[in-house]
Amino acid sequence: MKIQSGWYRYNIQVQRKSRAPGKEADTINREEQLSALIDSYQHLVFSICYKMTSDYFASEDLAQETFLSAYRHLGEFDGRYEKAWVCRIATNKCLDYLQSAGRRNIPTADLGFEGARAPDGGMSCGKGAGSAGGSETAVQQTPESICLEKEVRETLLARCLSLKPPYDEIAKAYYYDEMDAGEIAGQRGVKKKTIQTQIYRARSMLRRMYEKEKGA
Image 1: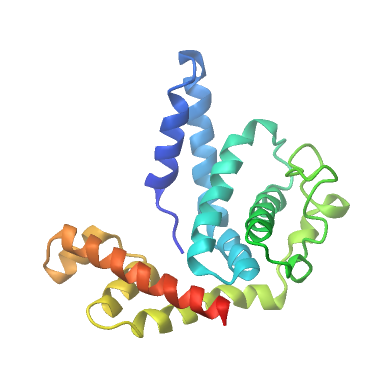
Image 2: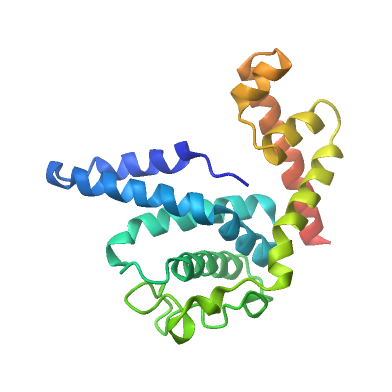
């Protein structure tokens, strides 16, 4: 799963409009920090979200929400235990999602996040809050979680290829191979608008598959 830069840039630009001119440099610096966080942790965050929700598309949304929340709270973060901090935000986003959906089985223990929430239910993103016991060992991936991304991708590929043509190839190119609409259009020699429409339809088909599995 690859988070597209345009997603968070749009959200950040909306927030910029309410900022005083003197804070522009700080905003740009935080954008650079966010880009680094996404580059470092996007696959880990997505894996956490998928492990907790078993829904590829919900995991996409939650991963994006995780990084936007991290951006908003960078000023409160002291820079220690960065990975643990990001993983806590992801876990809390998933907990909120699962609770709002009325789900009871929340597998935080399997991920090593038994103490994910702060005592007040917040993100626990202040000084020293990045980990249990003062280190990042609380978020070390288990052998199971190390294999999770491979499992997610294998499942995604199988579901993409199960779609009827041309949506099977479109879904594989976009979701599995992580090509954008322009690249797919160039490869297939068709208009970008056509590919965007096919991506939208393929996404709807795939989402129904995941929802059907969760409801089984």
